[in-house]
Image 1 (cartoon, rainbow, N blue to C red):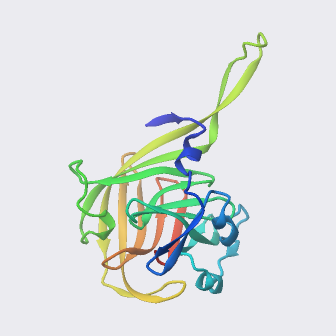
Image 2: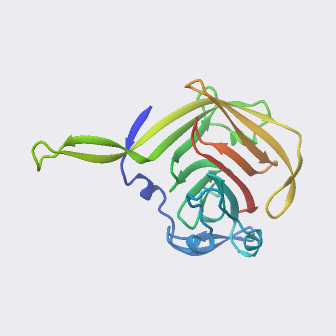
Image 3: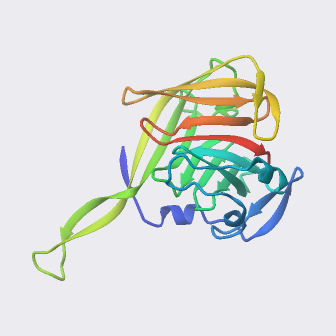
Length: 250
C-alpha cells in the first residue's frame, strides 16, 4: 500500500524536548532539540562507506546512555536524546542528525537516513495487541508485523504551471509504503556476548519475517529477561539494515 505524506511529517514527529539533564538509573539522557547536546557528543553516520567512528573510551566516559550503531557500512556512537512512553520509547541521535527510535529495545522508526522507517508495529496473529513485546516472548511465538516505509527521495510529479502556459513544473512528495509480514521468533540457549563495554550472557533470537509480497527476511536479536541488548534488523524487504549494541543502558 502507498500513501503520500506531507513534507512536515518527520520534522513534527521528531520534535524533541527542551535541553535538560535527566537521571536514568545512574545514566543521563541528552534531552535536546535536534541541534542540541546530542549533536555535540554523538559521532557521525555520513555517506562515506567504511567509516568507523565509534570510540569505546568516549562512550565509557560520557554520562549519557548510548549505542554503537551500524548502518550503510558505517559505525557511530549515538546518544540517548529523548525518552518517552514511560521509558519504552528511546530516541538516539548521531551528529549528522540521523535518528534511531527503539520501542521496547527494538527498531520502531528512523529519520535522516537515505530511506527511513516511519513506524513499525507488532500484533497477535488474530489482530489483537500483544501482552508483552514480541521479542521478549518465548521461542516459537508467531505474530504480525506492519512497517510503514517513508522515502525521503520523493517521487517527481509533473503538473501544469498555471503561471506559464504550456510549461511543466515538478513537485516533490514523500511516498509511504506499508509492508506486512507474518513473524516467527526462534531463540537459542543463552551464551556469552561481547557488548562495547561489557560481556553478558544473552540469548540469541532470530525473527523470521514472511512478507505479504512473498519475500523473506531475518532479524537477529540478543536479549536477556529484561531487554534487547543488541540487534541487526532489515526494516522491510530490500530495506535498509540497522545494527546496534547497547554501550550504556537507560
